Length: 462
Image (cartoon, rainbow, N blue to C red; front, top):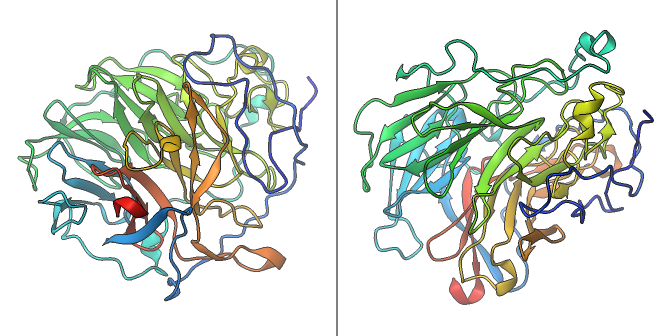
């Protein structure tokens, strides 16, 4: 099969929405490879750059009609979720802490903070420190699995049905490191640690766990370490995002590079969708049980390949990794591998500039923002380390029209002081991670590079 090098990008590197790929209303047949502007496959050109202290006059920039202000100084904030009583829970993965911010009078300003799990919460020091760096950054070179050069060419895809022995190991939880995703459901707080998913018995207003957590699921560790969780609207099914062990190696544990489905007690395991290199953000499309995820794609194919993406997730869907990308466009390291599997690879809904590191995703259901934002998606782009010119380091937005995504656009920018032009090291003072809607309709953005949470409001709703 001839390798296609065509992907959708613009000259500015902005990802485009694929008209052939929509949300859950699409028929089951996979989309075909997409033609667009050529993006040349090339060598890796990493520019890890420097995390610097925020200049005194620097602030995140939002569109006209919006204002950005500091909501909280907090060390290395990652994911955020509101509890049923309005408390904001925040994970700080690098210091193994979950912080609670309480806004007693619901005026959009928190009055107290406390540590739900881990050490006493600390305010950030304004950036420029190691705490803002995500752990386990993948190496620039990952060996290709040699099996693809052997008898697997043209073979059927490996099956992944029964869970591995010891997969569902309930009991006391240990080694609770790198908390990331959280969800409140059925009187529990569910937390995705890198090696396990646990739940804490929760009563609205709790500032400390009622007892030790119950471990529901063990996960393989190493490689992409985030574990996120979301429930369907009825609360009867739980979905967990688990990233790959490697950049592009075949033959990985089938619990990885996938979204997994469970019952709320951790039973009922099955692979809901696969071939998703590093799904990080999870959210439900408003008014539906359609899961959306924000995904980090593979490296070492040059500055402009492969685009990250945000997409609705189909039950049983395969999204290409590691063999292909954007449908049937073969990764050059796997040309000819598993043709029947690649034939059904799904084209993602929304492409994002390559190496942007798409992390958190949320849909806007409030009324404070203008009508065009209603039900649209916000995606936090943590920023590149493996591209010569910076990509990401912003929050992007895509509108939803009749359940279908529109073009991706910048929403909050301004975190970069030097984008790497001219061969210089990238300099940035902030790195967006999570996005969540406040009860009053404002938007919160966690920034683990600057050790802050930012609040975005309309000028009228400030």
